[in-house]
Image (cartoon, rainbow, N blue to C red):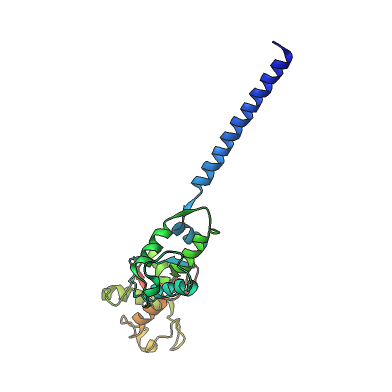
Length: 222
């Protein structure tokens, strides 16, 4: 074979091999990018644990939904980036079903990371503060309520009494009324249940939070 012709053939083969290798690498790169995408809802739990996604299970009359709706309207007075129906005609502070649906849909979309503008939108318009009660539920405990059996409250009260046994009136952790007269008995103070309910609504996202650990110990059951 002619030397010049042989050289061209070799160069052609090398070019083809390089192109093929490049295509394989490019394809792998695309594949990696594809599998690295995550839903906005899952990213929220990792990147912004201090916030929780609002869902349709929460009544739209809840203040958290009202605040989220107000945030959207205040930031978009001259626009409607989510294309909500009849936005200009909506005057009530309760969000329309369309807004709730948009939050649900957009939070399920997949993105690469939290720098995506859509992530910032969902964070701003579709979330609320993380509360002690959220941490309780997520760690497989049941928060006691006013309708919980008296025996469950009695067990919780026993833990509180034990943890504060050496405290005098006004010095126990939650400064309960009637503490001195109740601390040695099985009947909790009149404001004990109220304190549990109040503390469960405190903002907290860290499992090392003192308020969380106290509610977990004194206001829950397995």
